[in-house]
Image (cartoon, rainbow over all chains, first blue to last red; front, side, top):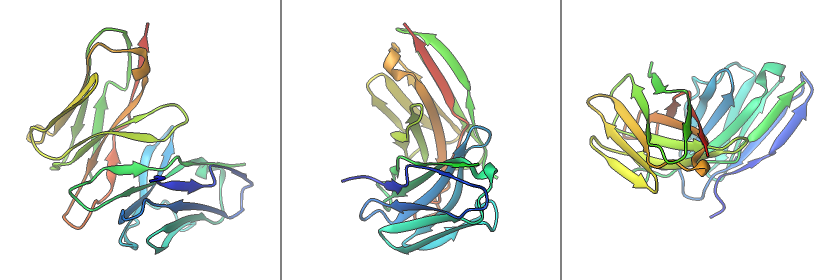
Length: 114
Length: 114
């Protein structure tokens, strides 16, 4: 199994531009999470999906952030317009239903907004 | 709001020594996770602890969970340099409908010196 696959791995963009981060979860893992990691705030849960349905998006910082999961094998996190304070590592993670419960993280998308 | 506190946040130790990292959390949960993160890398799952009294060991690392005390420990035995990394604990507020996402501690930055 290839694990959780994220793209792009690195992105540098100018303030105001739209950024789209992509995630392909592990096949059969029905829970998908988007996390953001920064030095100041650590790891924060942005949103999670169960069976492609958004369950809790209370961690999404602003309306500039949106996430979709159109099918079981693909999710996107979009920032529009981007700002320098959005610079962070964005992780996608996935887990299967209990009792397996291990939550697997992708390699992350390193975003720099200048 | 669930709070997860780790201590210490920074730890420098010598090879061959033993040490324990502590993880306290503020509300009832019986699912606790330990992850390892190397600089610039993703999070690697170490342990998933699913019940009170759970103990798991892998090599020089051993994790335990006391749900009554809301405390988990990660014990390092006879540390070696390769264990240098940042270790995170995280609590899952599982509600029966699938994983609810993890709340992470700030991480313990561990340096093991020869």
